[in-house]
Structure formats: structure tokens, C-alpha cells
Image (tube, rainbow, N blue to C red; front, side):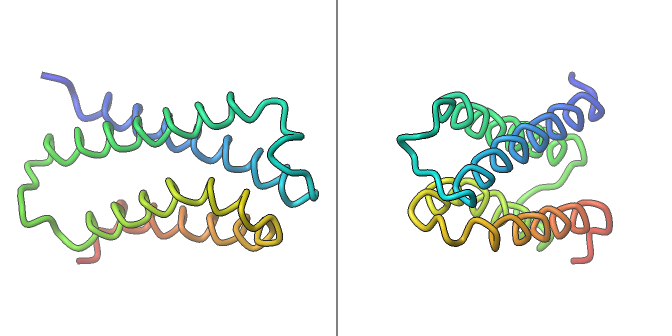
Length: 123
């Protein structure tokens, strides 16, 4: 049986990969460059996808180790919604480069909300 600390590390690694890839992408689009000019787009996209997978894997592993069953508490549902937003933002950034600066700060706030939900488990 895998210890919860391993799932936590996997989850945090995924979060770091996710923010790394989105930070690079948003910086690229906020500077006015398009998809064709991004020579490392494939690497950033792979980092984004693998990061999302690790966040999900680590999160569900922790949920299982904590003994949380269906119906999930509200904080888990909020975190799942945030995960979906983080998954879709990569397409939004390329489709609307003018949103790059706004997304930069919005994703930081969403990350803060996810951390609050995990730490405080308000509902």
C-alpha cells in the first residue's frame, strides 16, 4: 500500500509542472508571439499534460488514503473544477493572446483557492 506522503509528492510535482508549463506559455503569448513561433511548444504541452495527470493521480490517491468516499465533500468538487480550468486554459491562451496577462493572475488566484480548499477543507 502506497503511503499518503508519496501521493502528496506526486501531486506537488504535478502542480509544479503545471505552473511551469502555463507560466512559459502565458509569457510567450503575453509577449505577442503566436503558436508557430513557439519552438518548445511540444515540450511545454507535454509538461502540461503530464502535470495534469500527476495532479489527478496524486489527488485521487490522497482521497483514497484519507478514506473519502462518494458523495465527495464540496472542497473536492471545487478542486476538480479548478483542475478542469487548468486543463483548458492552454487552449484559451493561444486562442486569445490578449488574455495572457489576465490569465497570469487568475491562475495564481485559482492555485491559491485550490491550496485553501486542500488545507482548510471548508465544506
